[in-house]
Length: 454
Ligand SMILES: *Cc1c(COP(=O)(O)O)cnc(C)c1O
Image (tube, rainbow, N blue to C red; front, side):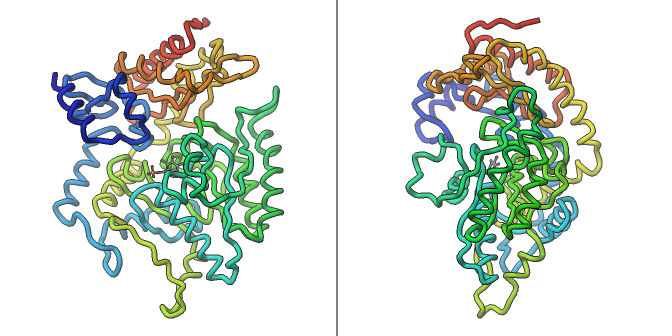
């Protein structure tokens, strides 16, 4: 009965994110009392395997002893201090390490406290760089279709998921949107790299037409996570870097979701061998512990703001919790784990198990695609496998998978009709098999007993 008590109190006063609150008349709200490793536990002792890393943030499990200890130690020293005019050791150490581990040329770190704000910083900095450099006519951005960069108005504007954006359209900046090199749209026999090269023509065209008025191209490297976990080949990023240089346009890499090992490399940009002009980090930056975000940029950008105060070229942007010491301490402990344990190597084994455990779903009559990039694996349910006709969104097929998974003790929260796993890196191979089994059952139920083949 303890669950019911807290849920009733919650629904009287809490307005939940990304939720039609009326759904909770029938959909259970799960009150979590504690977490440990991959498990979340409610007030009655029921456990749920956190297959979505609590919205893609958690890397090394809940209540990770090393990160717990680091945050506890920091809280005894300094919980927070203004970062204008003052500094502290955690933010200095974190910045040194981020500069070291991110792609070459990203030499300066600006902090915020959530991913959307890190995007706002990158957009404003890029525009302001061009203005400081005598190019105030550069005011536009180029983005990809189906992209997602957050919910604040600037970040929402450069995204392209209509579910989140359409309502607010009258309030938003207007980017030039180029069709994404989505490998889901491949022709028979075509490879993802070929799709990327074919689709790059549209980007080249947009740059040719609009470079003179464009500040930056913004992309999510390799995986459009909120855009149904659609994936594309790294060669697109290689071509994009070259084209941005040629056209005098910045490249913003939003690694908020894909950074810190999700795609198999520490940063997704590494797979294309490129350095962006701006890299936005959050989510896994603190292993999902605390709200912290960083926008890294180059010495060239930094220098364009560096001048006498009277010249009014400074970046006068701040957030109250900019560079919070507790967040920095959690981030440093996270990087310590990457340094002292073979995380990426272990993830390769786990990713291979994810592949193997879900391979049979490729033959499912209502699964159009099983795709994977590193530790992100997605299964797309469709009404008709041959034409890839989607289910009408009103049918909320994914919700049936979600409900089934809860009944089996797993938190699998689909995006529309796309069921995915993006687990914490401390998951075991057996737990992956369990998730795959639950996902397969859920897909069967949601697609009306299509039946498992094989
Ligand atoms: C989550 C996300 C954001 C926004 O981060 P918030 O902390 O939720 O504001 C931006 N870009 C990508 C790619 C994301 O996945």
